[in-house]
Image (cartoon, rainbow over all chains, first blue to last red):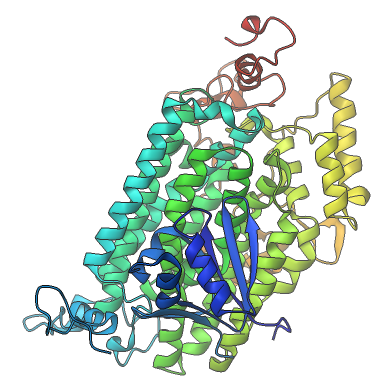
Length: 93
Length: 525
């Protein structure tokens, strides 16, 4: 068994669509670390990461369809659970 | 919380979960005039036990209506950028002409595998007896076709100006090193449906593709290649869904029956190793081929396999799954992989469909810094010696064909796990014949299914048997040049192969960028 600390991540394209998404993730996940690479942002978080629709809506001031983040998605890790309100990435063990 | 719509203020909108349940269940049926086992005739022979197909659920809960909506938007974005790229001579904006060689590798070695994956997932969609995985496999099959098409379309702009990319499909089926990715996908396609999905969706997509698409696409951006970043990210947004299919499939198989665990573990061991060997090409793209570098192969392996893969296998520990066999060897070899690979292509530049080069001083300094324990000690002296030979007009070309691994089909060029100075090879015997493999991982795979791997179409063997010449070639004719005959069979034209320095691509690049030192029209025909 590997001894590494279990971290989930979400990677998104760098563009105007993802700016509020990244900001929402930073607000809701104080433990997350945002790494900026050329053209791409990778957000790492120990154990669990959540993206909440309501937080994005607060930032952009209008309705947001959570599924639309698929267009700008680059990669992710962890067990995934998506509803219309939130996307959760987590390791169960 | 109750939701309302404008048209009918009291109607409740379906939640994502309900919508997924409504639109992905009850679509199949129990057959009556043929038994189910005959309709889905491949679901039992691998020994996998499935008790309830409905337990399989897509965690994104993507339904076909949403799928088409988002895919259409991705295509619109992509084609707008391809137009802009072509109209603005985007091919001239990359960091250096050397960079284009990564695209030659990509188009001949990766894009045709997108097409292979398209075929494979069409077969999986037909073979799985549950509606959930049928729909996911169907979406992925369409995605993979889209990837092959958009990559060919995007790279076609480069094909107008640079060599090595015409006849990419013809080359993929013939050129020696392209049998590595080709045979990898054919191996998965000819396995059963469950092994196929563990091979491609889990071991390749979930565990390993981050290594291709994340650091390489980021490097493409850093090197000014707008087109590749765009098709890469467009594909990658689908890829994230494929990765999700991968982890969902594994969990489904492991939760269905404890008897599935050892079978799945064996497949993970096999396909992790096969995939790792395939990524050898990516290691040299990151360390030697992209002029402006984003991260080293070793750093990428540390982030995407050691840390991310480690987290994954910690999680799968609850089912009794452990890290893939020989993963430690991949970590110790991370210091050597790219140098061993680039050395091989330098040796065989006459038979590659791109233009290799001796690493620049700047590249070697970067390698020394990224690989302090190995580069200066083992590899730098070798490259410096090559450079010295080149300067004396004695550029070394290896004209002896190498021995290939019976499993991964890569020449036996890797070093022993515990000794970087010694070539690693393993030997097995089957039906009185000897077979050679490049590593413990490949030997285990061969030994478990020798009847499959003795059939490998090994390019070197095929060349020596006379099977890689155009029809009508007479190898007994006086002055017969076997290398020239093989290159003709590959459809290589002038400039497709040989060194970057002195190549038509280099001459054109310098001319177009206004960097030529002498009259470039004499060189650049």
